Image (cartoon, rainbow, N blue to C red; front, side):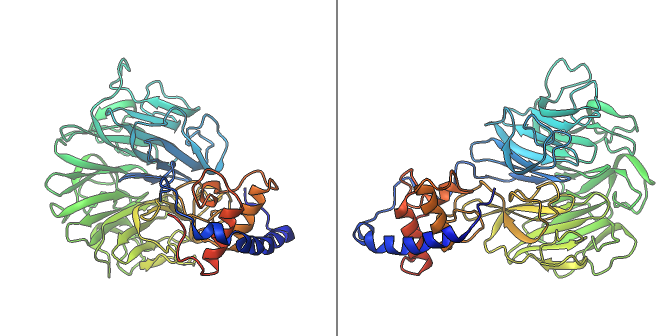
Length: 478
């Protein structure tokens, strides 16, 4: 909850200026606390650390736990409730041991450090726990090894949650999927749904898997892409060689080698090539292909125009769709922009990549949701999000749509930023004084206000913040 900045706050600022003079002697001898660090206990870590779903987001913490926020009507946040959350909450029972997370349309799955997979949210078979139910499952449940559900699935190396199905990459290069199979998205040669994992046929050399709305793609050891499932919008990328529904893996045309990573959107896909360029295919009504057009579909891959030096990418969107890529220059996005999910400050669709504005820092990971995007900043491991926010999926404590990045609450540490707005100003000093005087019970980012890291927020912290704002200190303790 954002604190109201009234006239009292302004009086507090004036008082803080007097405090600086009174504390001058103390501040001359000030030495940063040895334990001060750039990352808070809740900071995200590593690849696969952030995953944006339909209208929710989850982030892996430094301790190996999970925090999620946004829509929760199906229990997809895993906090034991079905209440939407506009700021991060902990996933029940997952305080540690998580190595990756994948958010689907209405469910979420986590890969554990022992090779097990846990899922929660809307079931209907997509949780892989057998005996499918229409009810919400608001806490994590272990995915079964087979139809008997007598043992837990083990040996998983990666997990991908799609629209109404889920898949895992297994040790040995096989892929197993479960859930809805109306379009053949489970890849077992049938269109029969299953509530427990089943092997994808004729696939033994996979190194990555990605799940879309009703299709799935895998990257092989040879750098090729195979896809299966719905092909109505060309998302299999085989020039419709397997028809409109493909229940077995089909080779994507022109991508028999040279692919480094794959990302599946709702009705389109994009591949990161080993030369750091990108190729996309599938639905293109909103410029999802990134080739300067926005007409019809692309049944085979096309090169994204003017994009190079890409290190990571993420595609999503249920009916429409967009993609974002991390480049040497920052982040570039293209496609549907109805909710500002391209981050360029507008709501105009873009058929060519545009830069996300206002990031301010390099990012190390990115994930696209249905109509929002979240990224992890390299500095202080803070989480930035933008786009649709009707269910609080940006994690900034509001439901206000954002067309440029804002910080999710509770991740990383920006010393002095007491109100978690991504900047250090005199307002933060006023808030620190209010807390120290007992005039407010808490702050949005209380750890940030403890500038000298002595375990308490006092007038000394307020004075340090004001000195920094006034240019009298070159920097605050990290």
